[in-house]
Image (cartoon, rainbow over all chains, first blue to last red):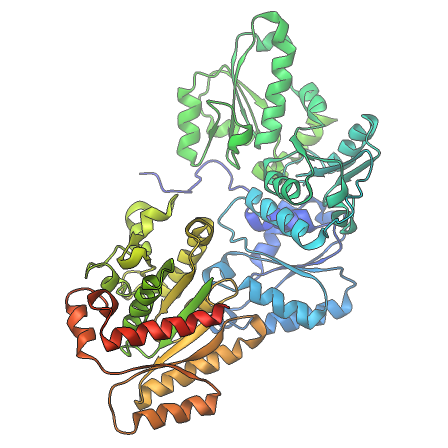
Length: 368
Length: 251
């Protein structure tokens, strides 16, 4: 019997509260993980590689049994008020976890009360710890743009500017991803590159309505990009500026690809970009590989090809690997064990949200 | 869009008031959604010809929570009223309040209001505000006004007072306000004075005065509201007048 959601071999992935915190980590706010303590520990200790190198005000709400039973939201508001007096925070973010999800905490009310008490802008993210990291990222980008991007009545577009949505350590192979994306896009002619949430500040969001275009590097950024397009008319495209170096790091020659049936498992935008790159290499050979993209995370129809699929359960993964007839699987190394007796080639493509620190050493070896 | 939540002591007639008001709104040409928020799931029964619809929680138990369409969890009743019952867990288990929240989140994901574009949404809530889940219908984005159903009986007024206190406690949360009291008469001695006195103490208006009526019971036996049964009856006109008055809240 299979139990829905149970992983027996594959690691549990980063949950949605970690995704939410990852977007906010460098923005100079006070991040409150609304939990008893364990979720904040998970965010900082496992899912946030910047914790050891970059300062950020991440707190646990420290909810206790009776706080949950009695619904003592006012105590949390008092804690936030006290902390905000000691910290020069630009905003407050309250990030949900399973505890408030279970007792149905009213985030709109928390936001209203916290803004009144602190005088700071407050955002709340109704993550619940049950969904994966990409859901938290998706909600948080959207909330940040809604809250911090003002109406641009003058349509004063910043020339040669580009916004990049979706850069977080959870989807990146290293902490320098934001810097390298900026360098790549700058070398391509962009004069102002904003990687929202990475290497920048909250003020970047204020300019989001004035950028020429947005690049979405992870599917979790698509909803925010669509919002910006609808509200400000900013066009967007899905691409991965770092795909060249990702491809270069794969131990696969062009000849290795000929006529092969390949499965790429990652977040959808990176997997798509890699598929496009591998196809281009073999375009003129008449022996192009048959490449399918799969993801455990957001599978957006707009950028999916026929045959692409979402993996929802560990048993799905086993079935797809054993029944797919693949010659090559390109995926995070942590899936290698779950692939069991897969007889083809398994090529590592690190994904921090999947393997966390287990992938660190592999990542370093892979990209340097 | 007029969004009302009906609260009051258990057994005081909330579902009867709600269903008749929904029917009255519908008879005035309004598109109405009625959401029963009581685990008993009997709010909409008299809009559906006496048939109990499958509550959302039960549907989830049977089919899982991967609901993609409002049609899966709703039924269309008298006057094209879209009926939903949140239902609850197996009696004695789980968390009913959490079930209400989960249903509301699901309705939001299904974009209920955007899709149906109702003129009036009625939330028929379990007797009292016993926990966060039962306050969900008056959270920001849901009902904007609370109507409290009471008779002149002591315990009904006690419950009404509790509901007023709960709403007062939510003042800094941006929750709904109490728009008034519906007096559902039980014909006890001094009933009108007692309710008037309570309303005055709370600074509330008695927006509706519904006399005790055998016709209500008569038509409920047939699985319908008095509005559906005979819209020309004096009791039906009471509900229609109240509906017209409540529509003023949305202007």
